[in-house]
Length: 209
Image (cartoon, rainbow, N blue to C red):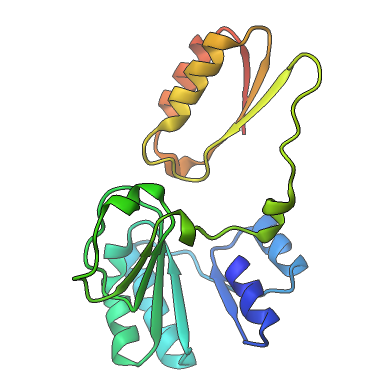
C-alpha cells in the first residue's frame, strides 16, 4: 500500500491486486487505493495463469510482485519480460537469493549486505537502506515506560523466517515476572502449533492474536 500511495501521489495510476480480505480492503479503501480482488485459487499455477492473463490484458507499465516464493512465479516474470512490462520483485528472505528473472529485486533484510549480486541479470537493491516503511513511523518517539511494566506486545511480522519469536518470548519469560504478554503472528510463519506449546509452558500470562 505504501508503494501504491507513492505512485498515486505522483499522479501515476496504480491498482493493488489482493486476496479477498474484508479488513484489508476496508483499510486500503480508506487510503484511496484502487483494488482488484483476486479469486480463490486451488494452486499456484492457477494464480500464475490468472495474473499472466491479467498482465496481457491490462498491459501495465510496471508490475510489482510481493511474495516469498518468487521462484513459483518465474513464468509470470518471463511474460512481463516478453511483454516489455518492467518487473520489480519485493522479498525479505535472509539467505542468498537466486538469479530472479526480474528487472529489479528489492530486499531490505540486513542479512543481505553480506552477499554480492553484481553478476546477476536483475538489479538487486539489498540491505536496510531499501527497507520499505511508511514515513510516519520515523515520527514516532520511543518513550521510556513509566512505572511498572504490566503488558508487553510482541510481533515479528508475517513470516519470521529465523523463528526469532521463540527467542524473544523465552528471554521475556526469564527476565519478567507477573506480566501479560500479547503475541501477534500469522499462520504463514508455519510454527503455530509449536508456538502454543511454548506459551503453555511459560510462567507469565500470554494471549495470541
